[in-house]
Length: 337
Image (cartoon, rainbow, N blue to C red):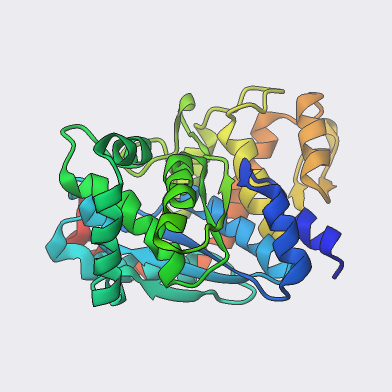
């Protein structure tokens, strides 16, 4: 594949890239670069988590090797969003959700943070980096990701460790949501101070809450998200009740699920309609669907029905897995059910 095509795939649907010039150079000079994304094991695994995974399908096509870091230690550092004693079972829960909840063409390599972050060299670098980073700089890096209500020392360690993960995982690219920008900028600034090379940072958009503009789809906000193992009835009900005004695409969670999840996975989308409303129609690209919606040729009710069908189909494996393991979910907490 030509470098121009690889670059087009790698940067498609990205909210920001630090930097595009470095990405272009990497794809021109390295046949099989590598990328990783870290996911914390905090709350219920919902579909908003999977937007960067859709990006990983583009990476795969572009010849970029994918890795997923189950960031169990980070989950406790962030104001104990995951208690220390629950990290192991939450890590296993998240791994199953990722493995079964996304239709991988080629399964990425999985790594757990606790498998390498307690090593002597890693902890030595954590201390070295903490000795040259100011409190204000570490706070700014953490501010959009960590809770920071009554800031803990651990929340300042969080960006230091995320920066070092890039070096110890030996990757060329870090992938994450746009809310990770300050941490990624911190990594690019501070890794060279330890003699390590800075990495390319690729950020994806955040999916809006099902409730509408102003907030993102979040595990901590009931009613804002769809869990990957929700029942068919729950998925249909949540999609039906979601914010989706006719013709509006900005901060529209239904449109975003189409753009960043359904189209990357399925490559197209069929809308089933009664003949009196125009009959069935198939969209081969997101742009064609977007144009039909903004032109009010596609009604929100018809779009929602199609989105619900697609999501029910895509997540059938993880739903069947957890239908038989409700007790396991209950052990994690009522909000996981």
